[in-house]
Length: 414
Image (tube, rainbow, N blue to C red; front, side, top):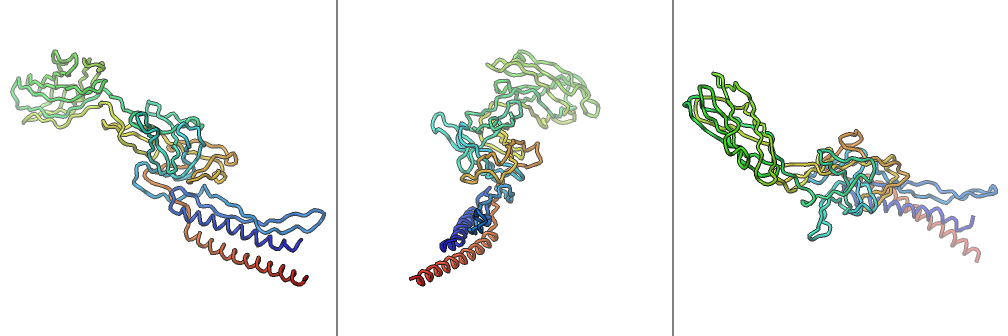
């Protein structure tokens, strides 16, 4: 061993302490960064083996940064629509490019927002995360479900501009009327009310209901539907009878099948529920009426549920699932490759990546309108900082003493 080897141990220790200070500083700086996973510096003894039976050379310490990516942070409510946290194992999947040709990256930071790409006539709006990466999800299948695949190629960017999603008009198939007919009215008395019904093109047409008293406790119900073949005469004529107590005694539903005349209106079948009819003395009173169906709707806002479903809320009052977020898991999350902004790249060392549905797994669940807090412990980081400062100071002193020894030896030689 040369005399200069006595500098090896304190020098390696100071370098290791400096690296540890950097890690501590990064942890403290990200104490309020959603989804941030605090790291730690682990140290191990470093020995250089010597051949031929010589004594091994002690070379100080070697630092190693360990990332605790699998540590769960506290879930904090934000009351923001596009914020979502994962409670349990797993990650959101993102990509750096809207065409998914960039690097796939995983993150726990669910602070999502909307980003406009190609501003102008062809602009598109996507859901992105805090670093600008495009959040990936399974698209809807058009039948009320989602095309949930096993691989990353089953995912795509979530485009949510109005031009990408409209809620088609739906024809009315069910209507309901709750009303009270006047039992003390004269034979021949007639009264009417109306319910707006939709054709296949989303046009609202008046369905007129006319009640005519034909005998005691007996009425005729005639139905007309505007802009259809049921306007040349009343149809159908249905006898509606009541008991002496005013309760409906005849059939509780009537079905009409209008063929609409407006373009695109098509033909329909409407089941009118009249089980809520009663007959009492007084005046004709409509208690309530309703029908299904709607006009076409434009996308107005988004919402997220605890299954990870991104739903669109439309101008016609309807709601529809547009995408579903997966929960991506790997065997060894701590072996993922760190990237900027609390993102991690997939590595072979981390193991196989699996995509899970939030409502079909017990490994994790989505928490809407919430974020996962940083796992940094301020108290713990300052404690480690004091320890590193003491270690660094001691090693500086060891280096100084070694330097003094070399200087003294040099002076003696001269």
